[in-house]
Image (tube, rainbow, N blue to C red; front, side, top):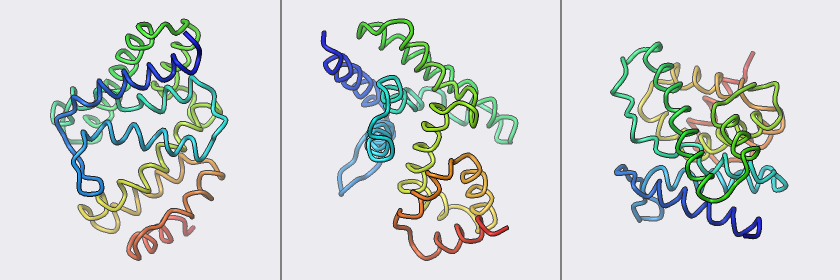
Length: 196
């Protein structure tokens, strides 16, 4: 199998898995499985932000949230400790599913280990690949999910989340985020978040 065919097979298999997400999100008036839509947005942003990204990064971006709905947030305490436990278990869940799919697609162990390393968010802010994946995650959040999040929370909470998001981003990603079109309320909250 040629490399581009293997990548295509992996994407198709990831997407088929995420098509089972019972949660839906509307785009252009049509409902899509939530994590399928998220995965495609991750690929679109990666291609825009880092068009020369290596194959293992393309794979990690596409399966970043694979099977996320299978471990609901409500299965952990609704506090910071519960949230962190949930996120930790989710990362391992994503890595396990991705590993099984990548084995079935014929990927070598070295590539699979790189994808798992990225999904487990190892060496964030010290590893260039992990940082690039995090940048793409943040850009996707700002473009597609920030407005919905902001509608559900007060300004102080949104500013706090924005500060945490910006802290995780590289300078290049921060500059790129300035090109994302957002409404006036979000603009003012971003301005507060970046203020010293």
